[in-house]
Amino acid sequence: MPNTRRSLIRHLSAAALAASLLPAATAQATYPVKPIRLIVPFTVGGVTDASARMVADLMGKRLGQPINVDNRPGASGNIGTSAVATAEPDGYTLLLGFDGTLVINPNVFRSVPFDTLKDFAPIGKIGDAKLILVAATSLKADTLKEVIELSKKESGGLSYGTSGVGSTPHLGGSMLNIRSGANLVHVAYKGGGQAMIDLQAGSIPLVWTAVAGALPLIQAGRIKPIAVPASERASSLPNVPTFIEAGVKDFVIDSWVGLLAPVRTPRPIVDRLNTVLNEVLNDADARARLDKLGITPLAGTPEQYHASMKRDLERYSEVVKAAKIQAE
Image (tube, rainbow, N blue to C red; front, side):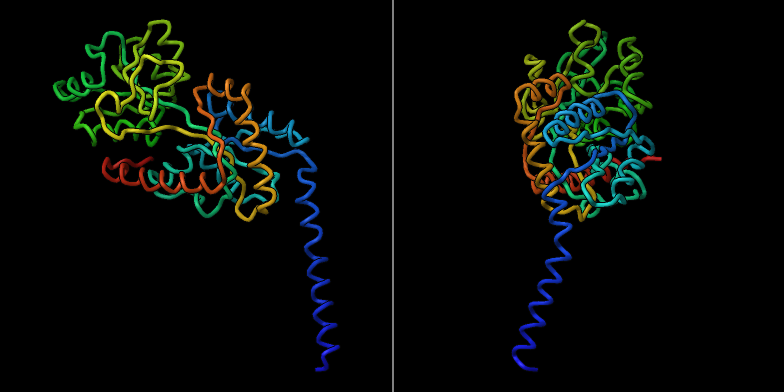
């Protein structure tokens, strides 16, 4: 084949490739050109939904297009999460990721309709929500050490309530048993609200919950704080020690929320969303609003978010196996 012919074919092929890529490149450069849907795999209300709506509102203003929250509850978050895993990877369907759904459900359910590390393109973590172990005011224990010791002495141990089997607080209680030799017995509620009602009535001695939900009751003296399983104290409860300070080494277990897109979403779109998310998380007013929800903002990269999910999947797998936890 003459050189001139080969050269012509190469030029024509290059031109065809460039033409085929032009629409996608243009779409990414102008993204977004229409409203974005953010699927929250839980019902309206609560810290998870509230954080999603706040971040969606502030990101939408910066992007120039609204981000509309679409609540898709069911199957402990698996239904809404699965809907995003199979959505068109064009940047117009996003997921409000939650640790319970993405890194705990795959360990406690026999099967889930998505693969956390393969079916999503992480955008970034919004932040960590601190948990807290709280007690009924009648409980004859005021510190974590006293709770552990009392659980060993009580016939049948000490019961602790959570929002459900396989929830982050449930795994927290199991981890404490494994790490300290405590005898804490899990009581699963259909939601955290009823657990807190029973705690105030003294019907159950302990509850693991989010700091944000417990704070008003602590301030009113209706329940008492024991400790927070975090790397540092909660700013809203500066006098409440961490588990580490209370004597349980390397004990950190936070709940978290983040943003993800379907896998194969173009990287320029993921980067655009990550940049805007980080702008929101670095805004002083937004940080203050998240803090009121008990969430510590954590700006970062998609790679950092992916790595943290991978670590949590492995960490919780060990706890679930040791405690023999399985969801119905």
